[in-house]
Length: 323
Ligand code: UT7
Image 1 (cartoon, rainbow, N blue to C red):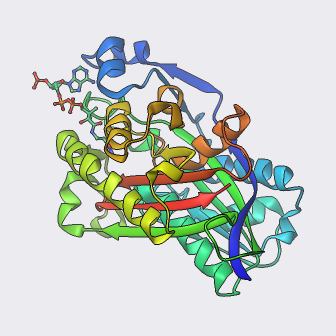
Image 2: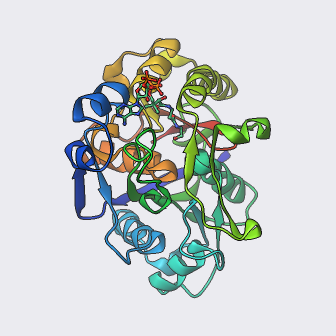
């Protein structure tokens, strides 16, 4: 018997305010048509004034706990993937822990930008397989609207806010790729590409900063690296693209998603798409897509999911899991 980290519950939260592409037409020199055709984005949600990442993460966490029919004290660890924590410290994860009224276990943030949820899942998997935790709440939550340069049309139209969460639980499987749960992970980063996507400020430089991106450069890396990491992760699980029921990609750009699906030989009917409604929510995009995909009736128990993401670092990776 092999221990696996199995999904027991999922949930998400999107802030009330929906911002259609047309709203940007009065802020920068852009058009709904440009944003739709270049990125696939039609609208995104923005957090309300005063609403923080830990607020949204807590709501997504509560939804995932309800779905799993568990109480906060049933959880051993919280891992929150975010690049937009409320404060420099303590971690947003410990704020979620307190908001949930959870008085045991431990909580920490993971920062791998848009690949954050993949890195958080891999860490949760390692905690469960090593016996350090039986149940882990894995959250991706972001308020990227706070990092925007509202005069830069090449970036401000692309991002959105939101949160998604999974409850993972250790369960015994047969040790085959038919087992439910995380079957393999593949993590990568290459800091030489730090200038491709970054925020030009931070604590040790005494500034706040805004997001800067060389869009074309990131696009090129994404198309090359995403199919690569997903293939590697599938290979580690002894599986291939034809075994995949759903590709659940980071939702940054529809053209990147379709190029990756094409490279993997997967039809778009096998891809969970939320980019049109959420924009790029960084570390929140994959858990949002998982929870929304399940809610839409697309994702079912026992199906094989290939998740993949890339973002600032550059950092990228893939997790293969059977739902
Ligand atoms: O989540 C982390 C990973 N991030 C990503 O995956 C994002 C990767 N990059 C992309 O998604 C795309 O590169 C973008 C959507 C950012 C840009 O699409 P593109 O097809 O690469 O466009 P481009 O940067 O080559 O720009 C084409 C033209 C330029 O004008 P010129 O130089 O051809 O006259 C831009 O100035 O479009 C112009 N442009 C815009 N026009 C209207 C750039 N942004 C806008 C805009 N509205 N918002």
